[in-house]
Image 1: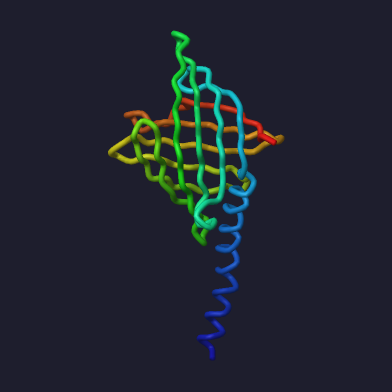
Image 2 (image 1 turned 120 degrees about the vertical axis):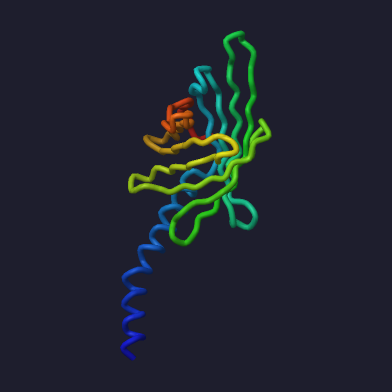
Length: 166
């Protein structure tokens, strides 16, 4: 009987935080759901971006579809596209895979902090590494993208502010 009581006590102490972590991460994806469009800069180029977040495959995953149209210094447009699939585990950790129009595939790992900021670390030793942060503030989605240099330091290569499409 004492073992059952101890197990119940541990479940009560450890179970709710795990559930809460899952709920926090899932809530961020719920807030992101929909289509966002805006402007920013990517690698020093002005850009127009469109992001769509949606549950897919019977809501087992969240898919991000991204289109980024950048204007190069010669005035030509470079269109970059990507899709990412995210899954939230019961402990609130986020894992996924990224596919882009360069032909690259990245593993994704992320979390949501106490302020509701979604942070996704991406890449591998075989590709490139970086971090993307997604923050909703004052009705806008702020996105900051960083890439890891050879020295291991992260540097910002993209920043944008997007508004939700009706």
